Length: 165
Image 1 (spheres, rainbow, N blue to C red):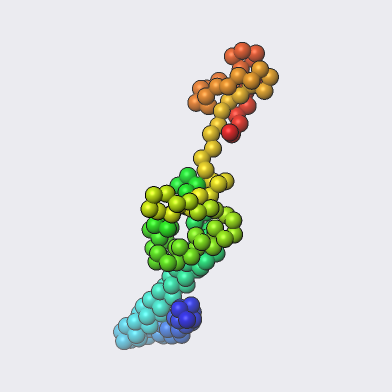
Image 2: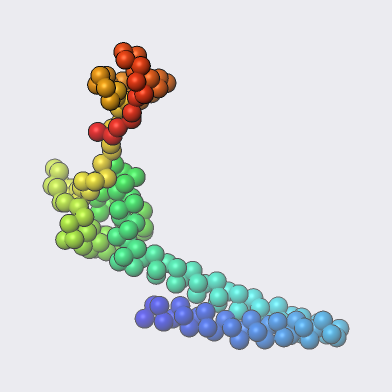
């Protein structure tokens, strides 16, 4: 229903914008000040309807279930692989029930797992946890921290590889 109203707002803006342009063209041909005012008023109404209708449609698209699922995964990636209902709710300004539905749908798909921690429920996305990297020599097995600006192994001189653990 909300989507239909937003579409009708966008469609209703078309005649206002069209007649506003026609009045502005007519006002350019003559020196009538009333045509300019009417044209500006029609253009303002049409622009307001168009902008508000497009904003409403974008908000509805951003709050669709698929968009919220994708957004929840992106948010979990930023937060280290763990997400709560409150995190999702605060990020997208949605109700607690809606955030819970989205996270439960992700859990039902197997994208995440529920974990009870004290008094809160945390959804853990296994593949999105932070990964650690290390420099390792492929020949002698020497391990070095990544933040050291060395490209060759100090023991054997081989090219170091960076691997995620």
